[in-house]
Amino acid sequence: MEQRITSRENDAVKYACRLRDDRAFRASEGLMLAEGSRLCAELARAARPYKVYYLDSKRAEALALGGEAVEVTDSVAKKLSDTKTPQGVFALFPLPRRGAEELAACARLLCLERVQDPANVGALIRSAAAFGFGGVLVSADCADAFSPKALRASMGAAGKIPVAVCADLPGRLAALKNSGTRVYAAALYNSRPLAEAQPAAGERVAVVIGNEGSGLSDAAVAASSLAVRIPITDAVESLNAAAAGAVLLWHFRAEALR
Image (tube, rainbow, N blue to C red; front, side, top):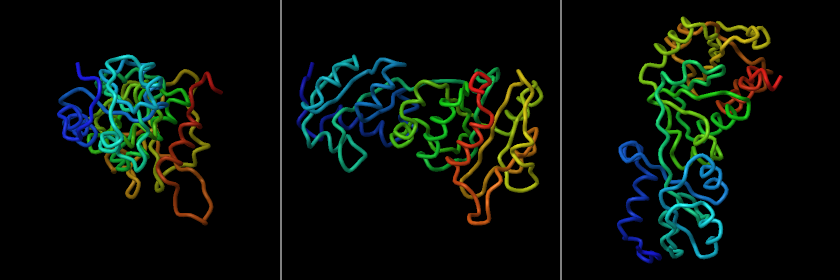
């Protein structure tokens, strides 16, 4: 077994880089690449890494993750990294695979439609986990929750809270509503102030957040139980998706946190 990689053209390095950059390849291989001691440690609490690459200065942190560990040179670390300054620990983790139907019974569910910035996707997943949501449903045209940037923004939450991709989000929202879940859509127009949205005790809740620029589709809003908005001053037109999502997720937080 190779214990030290010195060439940037090593096949294992090329494989890891492709996992980093290619969403379809991640899906086909069932693996994702994470970078950084803290992020990898968080993900390792949910799943054992398949392989770990590390700089000599990060040996202890790397070995603590479990899995096969291979030392790399500075040059190789720079190729593996998608940041300006490599953090020195890289790990291949199994890609969590969840079906949209598995999340139907969640007491609290976050739904994302066409959110394009992976940092926003990751931050929203982190907020969902923080406020006791049981899962995250994303439309197929959202940024990938398991890209390096999204994983960093979620600080490992994407590996611990179920995330499922849905081909027909409006249809899934309608099904949730018909099965008794109260579905709240974040929308600026034809909506009610957030304070008026008060689900009954024990009622299942889904919160739906849309694209950073254009918001939710008409179909998604129509499939929801109620459209809600966050009251803000005239100083700004709107909040960004991550900030608005944090407010909404706190408002609809799990009953145990109230």
